[in-house]
Length: 301
Image (cartoon, rainbow, N blue to C red; front, side, top):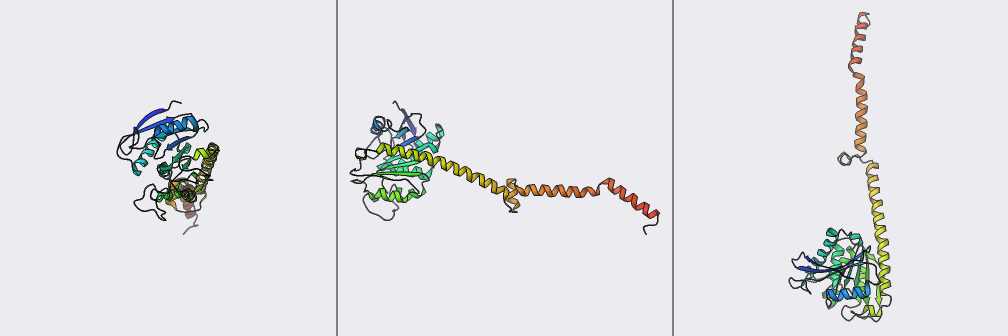
C-alpha cells in the first residue's frame, strides 16, 4: 500500500510529516506513536500487520522535532498542536466526519490523543500502554502538579466517547496501575485489555487476540456513534415540541421563536377586528336614521 506522503504546517509553526494510508474504510485512525518510534516504524507495523486485519484508514504523523518534521525541540504543547493540525486537515480539507475518527495513542502518544479527545468529539479512543501523566511515571502522585505534562488522568472524565485501555501487566516503564486509574476515570468505560506477561513494548507478542479486541472495539464504537446520533435526534425533536407546547407566557421568548404566543395574539387580533366591525359606516348611518325616526314619532325626548 502506497501512502499519501504529506507535509502540513503545524499550529506550532513547524513542517509536519504525515502519512495517510487510505483503504476507503468507514473509520479513520490517527496514530500517535511512542517516544522510541518514528513514522516509518509505525508505517511498517501498519502495512505488514495491523491493516491486514483491521478495516480502517490509517493516518500517522511525526512529532515536531522528530524525523523529517522540523521545528523546535518537542514539548507537550507542540504535540498537541501537531495532532490538532492533522485532525483539522482531515475534517476541514478532506471532509472526514469527526464521528468516523478513532484516535490511537501509544505510550507518550496517549498525551496528544487524550488532549484531542477532550477538545473535540470523536468516535473512539484507544490508549496503548498509556500514562496518567509524565511525573506519575516516576512518582506516585495523588494530584496533578501545575508543571506536570500530559495530564491524561484529568482529561478522561471529559472525553465523550468510549475509551479502550490496552496495557501489559508487567510494564517496566509505565506502571500497570496507570491503566487501571485511567479506565476508572473514563466517562464512557469500555472493558480494558490487560495482557499477562507483556511489558511496555511487546504487548502484541503476548496478546494473541489483540487484533480481535481491536475489531470488537470498532464494532462497539459503531454502535455507540449510531445510538448517540439517535439520542440527539430525539432530544432535538423533544426540545422543538416542548417549545411549541409550552404554556409559558414569556412573550419575548415566544415571539422570537414564533411559538403559540404569536398565534394567540393573531387570534386576539382577529377577534378584536370582528368586534370592531359592529361599528362600520353602514351600521352607523342605519343607527342615525333610526334615531331620527324615533325623534319624529316622539319616542325620544
